[in-house]
Amino acid sequence: MRLGRAMDTWTRMGLAAVLAVASAAGLWLTFGGSSTPPLRPGWSILRPPDDVNALVLHAGRVVAGGRDGLHAFDAATAAPLAAPTAGIDPAALPTLAYVKALAVDRAGRLWIGHRGGVLRLDGGGAFTAFAADPGRAPGPVGAFVEAATGEMFVGGEAGLAVLSDGTLEPVALPDTGAGTAVTALHEDRRGRLWVGLASAGRGGLLLRDAGIWRGFGAADGLAHPAVNAIAEDPAGRILVATGFSGRGGACREAADGVLPRWTCIGLREGLASDMVRLFRADRRGRFWYGSEFDGTVVATAAGLRRLGRDDGQAGTELKAMLEDAAGNLWLGCDKGLTRIDADASAALDREERP
Image (cartoon, rainbow, N blue to C red; front, side, top):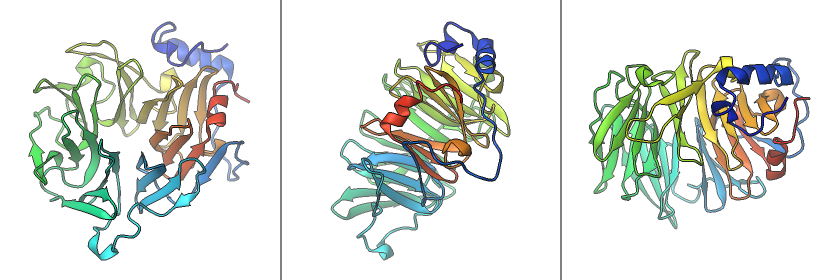
């Protein structure tokens, strides 16, 4: 039995049917074994980096940020390139350990969020560094989003800030019982700002719409109040990866409007784990669900596929994902970077579980 299109599970089949379909089609993959089989055609593992928290496409190169700083690769060939900071006097740069956020603004500048604050590469070797006080928002940086107004919002362990007149100014967040540690930021096509919080409080997902804040939690249908990632699908619905310590799920906005609710899926519906680290849609309409310890599940036209280290994923935790202009996929993991070229990516739609 085959799934007609990725994510029909939400519309025609119902959540419980996903598990039955996956089980009947034999789509489960067993992890284990000390040997790694040969990579399938079109798949490659790139190391270093040995850990990837963020990916961005900048000036024809894929830039990866992680525990050991920055790495860059040619988007077309995957050949390693000099880091974006190469050529700048190291003595003038902050230490870029634990890079957790990357962004490219409308002016083409590269923004780097790290433990010590923000580094902006302005081009031609010019840069601007914004130091962050660990006790004042944003603190160690973990998320960026550029608003339609041109403001750069910065989220971190100490809260939310906005870059104003060359300084990081704190943005007051509503008290939902979820603390202020910001893990994810997204501005949707309607200009609404979404903020994900790390703490498992009452409402770990915040929405600012026309200056008014609202928090979302279990009462609104969210699987778990700890938010790990926020994205948007081609239809404009918000996607939220939630969970902590084995609990959570992948949630999609169930209704457009001022007060959206959520439908969520997890292990019972065929995901690798209830704790979802990343939830993204690609340009082919497939949905990718990354877990923390149990690999990745992708919903393709051929059904649900579970991908892990034996398939060519660099690690068991999918933490970042990028699709470049040619359709190549880049998967940032806890043990390196996996590249799936465009032809191999397309083949996932045709493959049955071997």
